[in-house]
Length: 366
Image (tube, rainbow, N blue to C red):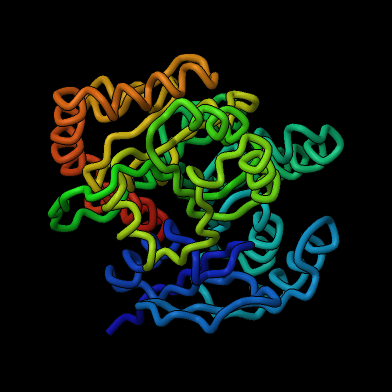
């Protein structure tokens, strides 16, 4: 009997908390692949949660900055150099160099999983010298990754335009599960995800002065302290609440109980403008109408299934007006909620994983 193919997937995050990678690796393991997810162990990391795939964490005392990337990439390269594997997968650009060189030296096939346009994300695009380094890495490696997948058609088109590669679409859609929408005892507004620069907190938080509902923020990030300061400056401690980081398995009750979800991005980078965020699908699958921006990927889905109130320009006034419309117009809200229930049947992980498995079938066919 043939042994299962061994796939090693690499991230810079802690494997405990990466929902997309948990879905992907679970699917690969269920399909019969021997799947290993390699990430980092941070100083505050909790014990690994048992999953249906193998997990390895490379210990990192340096937690950020250039030294972190150098240290982690070297450790990852030597790990991959001696790890028994039939294929390697780099998740985003920050692990692509070790995967590229290890696969070359060992003559193993490689896959690129691009969650975003890495060189165009806010944290990179705002620092030209850093962006130049990452752009070199991208140009040096991505054209040599024949097999790959990314999260939407806009990103597929960009990779084809820049590097001539034809990648599959594997969206960050949630797993379809039975849904019972609870009675909303409190009509709170939810932001879930990284509390990072470029997520419109500068407009969202002061807009809450004009909205008669609580805003609950589940997540942490590089704008977390600044967001708390904004709440203090606008005297909104009784209306905006920070829950900090919530582990993925503890997040669904917050999502299901929310009345409105928030998916806002500043179009300060191409990656933001062309994005299709995980939370967009999480709210959809919980039957929660949401507020978003009229960017291409969100607008395309909203034309098919109207599930969100999309604004064209992110301002305090536009945010407040949109949130109040969702709170005050019961018929409109019910229509969006029913559309969420229909949309989740189409945009779900059970549909997306078919394309994921096709990528690996084609990889091992050749």
